[in-house]
Structure formats: C-alpha cells, structure tokens
Image 1: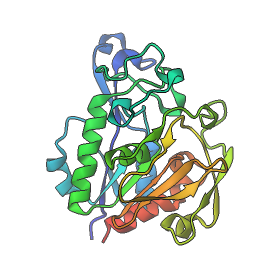
Image 2: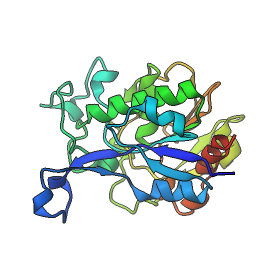
Image 3: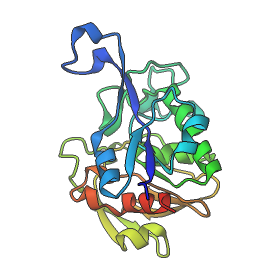
Length: 258
C-alpha cells in the first residue's frame, strides 16, 4: 500500500531577502519550505509534497491524502479585524497589497504587520478544498490562526510576551494544559511543555471549533473542529526535541491513511 501524500504550504520571498543568495537572482521570487515539517511527516510514515502558491487547490487536493498548514507571516488583518492594534499597525496600511518577500515567523525581521495576501488567499482556498474532500488538516502556528479566520473567528493581534525569539527554537518557556476528552489530551496527556514563537493567537473561535489547549495566561494554544478531522496548535512541534515522534504528525498520517 502506498504511503499517504501530505501537502505542505510554504512561503514566498524575494531573492534579495535571502542571505547568501547569488546577486544575479535578487529579483527572482523563491518558494521556501522549512525542512522540519517534511522531516516530521516522513518520520510519521507519509510522503510530504510542497504545494506552491500558484497551484489551484482544485487540481491539487484530489491527489492528496492530508494537508499541513505551516507557520509564517501574519494573516492580513483586513480579513478579520475591525480595529487595528496601534503597536502593530502604527504607520502601516494593513489593507495594502504587499510583495512576496514578507516573513514574520518567530517575530521576523519585518514589522509584525507584514502579510502576504497571495498566501492568505491560497491557503484559505486549500483549506476549503481539503474540507470539501474530507481530508485531515493539521495547522501549526500561523495554521490555527488562518483556520480560525476562515471560519469567521478573530485573533489577538499582538502578544509580545509569547514571541520568545532569544533562545533556541526548541526551548520550552511554558506549558499548555489540554482539555479533558479532546484529541490533544489523548495525544499529549494533561500538560505538555511547548516552545513559543508567535506574537498572535486565536481570540474568538470560528464556527465549528473548540479550544482544547491553553497556556497559563489563558491564550488558546490548541483547537479542534467538533466534527471534521482538523487539529491546530499554536506552538511549533516540528522544532521541538523529539519532533520526529510528535503525536500531531502521527495523528495527521493516521487519518490520511484511512
């Protein structure tokens, strides 16, 4: 029996933004995919395939068995916010079209307000197609934020205390508590130590979702759909010590194998 095929989303940056890239390619757009995601998917028993932003989800999803929505820059605030956080959007028009070279994973070198509308639109379409096809979906960091927005939810726009960018990516500055009876409780037990590399998080939940993990300050760190095979976590399990055995990826592959 062939291994399930998991589609991974990624980001796009201008060649000029990539350190050490040959000068001749400064005007070339480059698709980037953090290797840890694919490594974790492969270790869980599936094959990872990177899905570019130009692909039509209607063409791609019938070939997939599952989808992983990865971390990255902020989702555009105009998709969910009526009021904008002044510390994030001071002097910035969040409704303006932005180029491909913006990136805010782990706080990033750009303003947190930077976003890539092309990626937002693509991932929402990819999510919709995956849901329509009954595929399992795992969201990580940006993933739960985008999933929640697509379902009509909102985000906390700025949580600087959660953007721990000084230490290594596998540092675990806090624990999260999982909800009894949830899939995350079955995976991780009552508590799990996690990394914290985000400055935004789910606020008001979108339709059909429940919060199933919280940080000590009450921020939603995990969510699940009440009926569909969709799980999303705010931390980065692919960067944690023991990532190749993380239960999130096993869950995705097990459901993709059905």
